[in-house]
Length: 208
Ligand SMILES: Cc1ncc(COP(=O)(O)OP(=O)(O)O)c(N)n1
Ligand SMILES: Cc1ncsc1CCOP(=O)(O)O
Ligand SMILES: [Mg+2]
Image (cartoon, rainbow, N blue to C red; front, side, top):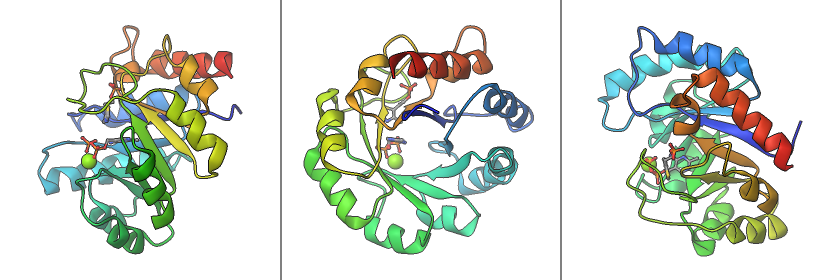
């Protein structure tokens, strides 16, 4: 298995009548290290229903299931962890709430934020956006050098995010990204999500 692995994030909106099957097909297509449920602006009951429907699909395939933005809900609902941004509450409290669960923290393009996250006990630090993206109005831009710097100094894994595709990911893999987090490269792949997973894995393997 290559040192760098795929980190899949759900589309911003999903139809729970069909998405569990789409997700299963995507996860069965190739290696996916973890799935992040990211439903921005969905009410809490909808997020809970999505967790109940999707968590088993991921966990039964040994894919870690992380919740975006809400460590408390992640801890209450059997998620494997949570991903928090800089505006997503108290990271130290989240670390305590999640106990052994995974905590990932957005660090944008900041070495300082990444070292703070590491000291606090984050299981990974996330840098980005590396490329233009239509999934999020990303306010920060990161360059591959930050991945080289981080991975040369620290053992804590780093995640690269933002506009990453099979076509542009090689420099990030070579710079030391442990995970590539993607939305559009999989869910908007012209031949469907399973082909998106295959293409990302092939590109990671070719770059490594
Ligand atoms: C793996 C990963 N990295 C970064 C983010 C972005 O988190 P955040 O800055 O809190 O922005 P939102 O995702 O909440 O819009 C992420 N979700 N996952
Ligand atoms: C959530 C997030 N945080 C920074 S960029 C981004 C969007 C990633 O989506 P895509 O892979 O489609 O660019
Ligand atoms: Mg957030």
